[in-house]
Length: 126
Image (tube, rainbow, N blue to C red; front, top):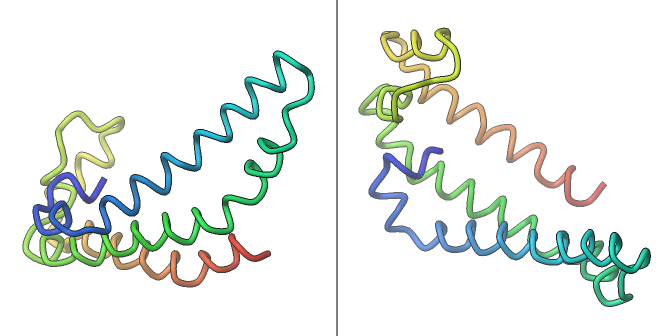
């Protein structure tokens, strides 16, 4: 992701907000699936956690991601963002973007920030 090459983003507290939110989301989800497979009906507390924790954890996770992207923008403006990622892209089209002069990574980051701003509330509340 965009956090790996950006030391400024790595030093910001939003990294912990993002990682903790997404990790905490997964624990009740997989416990729910495990109990459903074993007992055919998960405990009520797991059912409640599985379907209500996202009201807190999705907005905090999305906020952490948006802040990480925001604090990575200086790196995206200075370099081609795709060029600082590890090599070995899954297809040659992405690898070719490393050599572009139009700073495709910065444009992609700004586009994703816009999508999060517009789509985040829709995803959580609708």
